[in-house]
Structures are given as structure tokens and as C-alpha cells.
Image (cartoon, rainbow, N blue to C red):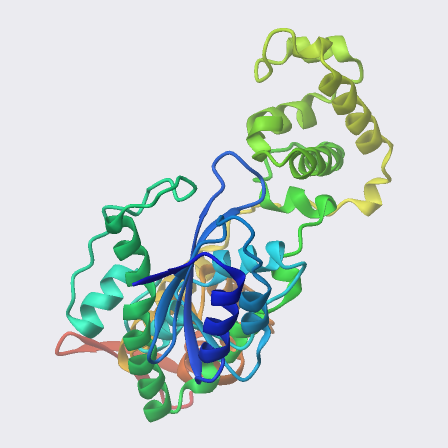
Length: 386
């Protein structure tokens, strides 16, 4: 295997890889102690060549790699692409590799199960066993051992075989377009943009009312800005439990923070205490009409609950019959909305999903379809009009 440590070697390699139809890509990174991921290694494999790029090598410029990622004539093949794309996005000023082929999603379309791991996919498609003992290594340390490099390059050499296998199967079954929606989400800038004002959306809604939610929104935005500026994990600034506690108690003076069990002794005298109180006050000053409504979490009716259970059976049967992962067709929110709303606007009732499952789901809800068991297989039967 070849490890690239200079810009000239990287440029020559990327030029050769750009002549191919695709390039398999993987990255190794560290982010346990930082907010932003630290890129430590890049693995690339074209149809006839595979290399490892060392981003930590002195003087190396990754511009040729980013140019390859931007080349629309070359398909970028990833497995579970989101974190890899996020790294390129953050390191290259908002660049998103395109076009993308995510083998994990393609495997779901081809019936390999939900969120299938790379190790399992390699085993199922190639019959090879991978040594994953170096998975949790510290990729920022140098020099890397031969064992670590062998592990790293294996993440792209087998990816070539997986890609060609899945691509052929998708073409044979006419399912290439089924990936479009998922690939569109993976290549949307909004998927990777970090806006502090939206940081609250990643939190659980452990707040009592809209006023508490307004405070939580301000606190989460303050924490996000601090974590980004200091490049440390969010929990290093303030733990989630403390955010919920402050949002619900709404202290308006630093000394009141000392009464909260989720904060350490002496926290009330820190500079952060003042910032937190300012955030609480901003939240309390917000017009409640500008704050999203809290979910009611009301129990569903017995009829809707029963309908959801039947829809789950139908979903599993449809997924098994068409060899598609159930989660790719519909999720639990889709099923709940189909069961409880007259005209739900959900992905499960659009495009190929409607053909596979959605149309039958609506018929089942209307009482126009029955489920039966024949030789261990669930079948959907149309009922005569009453």
C-alpha cells in the first residue's frame, strides 16, 4: 500500500483517480475532545489503484483531494456517508462531494437489512472476514503501524466490490431512482450547516411549558456558540441535564444557580454563570407566539393503536416481499400519521414507497384489505366492496 505525504504525489494520484468512473472514499478522524472533527487519514480507491493520504503530513495541501470530491464526473462511494461528508464540508469551506453513492443505503434498497455494517456487508457480498481490532485506534498519533494501515485501506478496497455488486443489482431491478431521495438529503448543505439558533432541536423536550422552551432555545444557542468558538464538545460547556434544569427553574440571578443540583459548587461565581443568566433573560423576554408548541404526547385512540399494529405487519410483509429494509419504506411517524390523519403528507405515500406499501396501507385503513397467513407468509387480500 502507498501512503501519500506530499502535495505533488496527492495531485498526481487524484488526477489518475479522476479518470475513473468512481472512487471509494473513507476517512479516519478524532472528535472526542473537540467540537469539529479532526481529519487524521483519508483512504481512496479507484478501479485500479488504492492509496492512503496523510492529512497530518508536514506541508501537505489537500486541495487536489477536494477537487476530486467536487468532480461531478466521478461517483464518490462511501459507506454510511454522513460523517465523512461532514468532515469534507467542514474542512473545505462547505464543499459537498457529489455525486454520492452510499452503500449502506443501497444495501437497504437491495434487501441486506437496516443500517447494515460495513463488516457484515463485506462478508455477505465477498465472503471475506475483516479484522476490526484497530477500529478505535488513535488516528492522530504518528507513526501509524502496518496493522493500522492495513485496517484503514481495507475500508476502501472491499468497498469497490460492494459498489459494483450493489450498482449491478440496482440496475437489474430498476431501483436506481429509489436512492435519489436519500442521496439528495446527503448532499444538501442544510444537512451539515450548524446554526446555533437551531441547536435546541437536537435536545429532548424535557421542559414544562413554552416559556421554559424559550429559555432552552436561548441556552442551547449560547452553548453551541461557545462550543464552536472553543472547539470543545458541547458537554464540556454545559451538560444537557443542566440545560433542562436551568430552563425549567429559570433563575434570573447568578446566585440562584447555586441552588441547582446539576451545576457544580462555585459555578454561580464563574463568567459562564453571567452568560447563562443573560440567556435565561432573553428567553423570558421572548414573545410566546414565536416559540414552537410543545408536543402534547396525548395517547392515541384504541382504533388508531390497532391500525398502527396492522400497518406494522403490512410493512414487514411488503418489505420482505420486495426485499427492501422496512425503515427505508416507512418509519414509526409515518405509520402513526397514516393511522390517525385523514390525508397525511408522508414519504410512505409518495413515489415508489406508495406503490410498494402506501396504497395497500390506505386500503387496510379503509377496511378494503385483509391480512392473512399462508405457509408462514403474511398476505394482503382485497375485500369485496360492502
